[in-house]
Each structure stands twice: as C-alpha cells, then as structure tokens.
Image 1 (cartoon, each protein chain N blue to C red):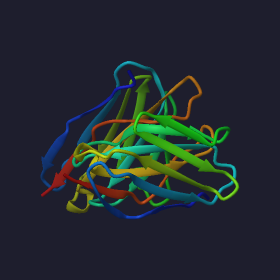
Image 2: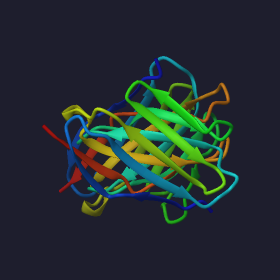
Image 3: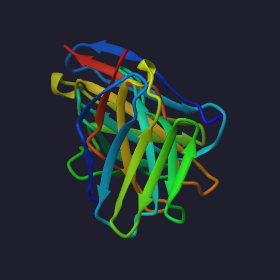
Image 4: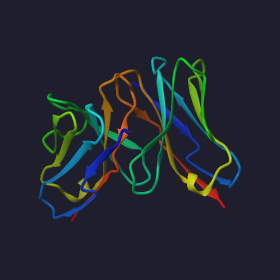
Length: 116
Length: 111
C-alpha cells in the first residue's frame, strides 16, 4: 500500500517550453501533497505544499508563477514548470500524506527534467 | 525553524558489519522522525520511523533510537548487505507540518 506514482519519469525539453509533471496517490487519498526539488548529491528542498482544493503554499524563494501547482483531487497533484530554462533542470519529487492524521510522507519515484 | 544535521556524509562498511548514521535536531517540539533510503535515480523510500513517545524501534536488521533530551536520533543497520548501499536521509517534523531533512549519508557496503 501507500504507492505514489509520477509521470513522466524523465523529460527533455527546449528552453521556453512548459512542462507538466503529474503526481498520483494510487491506493490512498492524499489530502496533502508536497513537491521537492533535488540537486545532484544534495538533500531534498521543499518547494511547496498543496492541500486538495486550495492554493499551494510556496516556500520562500520559490516563484509561484514559475512553478504552478494544482491539487484538483484527492489523488492527483500537478506541477507545471512554466517557460522552463536550463537552470530549472533538476530532479523533481512529489510526496503525499493521507488523511488519517499520520505524519508519514510517501514519495514518488521522481521526474528528471533536462532543459536544453 | 528546525535544523537537522546528519553525520557522516559518507560511510563505507564491509558486508556483514553494522552501519550507524546519526542525526541531531534543534526544535524540541519535533515529534516524528522518519528515515528514508534513496537509490540512484529514484525517489526516497520510507524504511523506518519513530515517534517521540518511544525511545527505540526495530524492524528486522534496521533499528532507530531516539534521545529526546539530547535531541538526537540514529539509524542502525546490522548485517549489512550490498543492496543496503544507497543514500539515507533522516528527517524531523512536528505533527502535521513539513519535514526537515538531513543532508544525507551515502552508504557503501563492500562485498
């Protein structure tokens, strides 16, 4: 149980295009989802927290107009990198927490974004 | 806010030996401490967690200890195997709030 999927697993795009990454909780309802960014050999950096049906809360320094987050249902959150540039290249990982009150976060497999 | 430090950053052990990774945290209100294993190119996988109302938890070859007074917690892996090689992250949080992650430990188990 507690499986989180991400799609796509890898994406290569040209500078200036927008990229959408999907995060799904497959066997539970995720009242809260988190989006992280991870640079090589570094820890996870929280970008934003999203609760189903409400606006995402962004961490300081994360551009909300650049990284658009939508959490439209209890099993799906999307991250759209608008007008991606090479510096946006990174490993993006989502996690989900169920609605039972437990603190546990279950992570997706990650999406490798490369912007040329 | 919370600050989590993790040591060592790299650790090499012989197969069959034990590995210990330590984390300290700063916020005494933190009450949930998970450990994640991340293999190359994959997302973190929860391997064990502990809440502040217990001092130790064990799951087969993996154990976690928590010292609330000293504000530190440790991951213990016994009888290490090559497949244990990965990056391990500790985290601390208060109920319902975000996780604060350590900087990671790259564990290599030498066959």
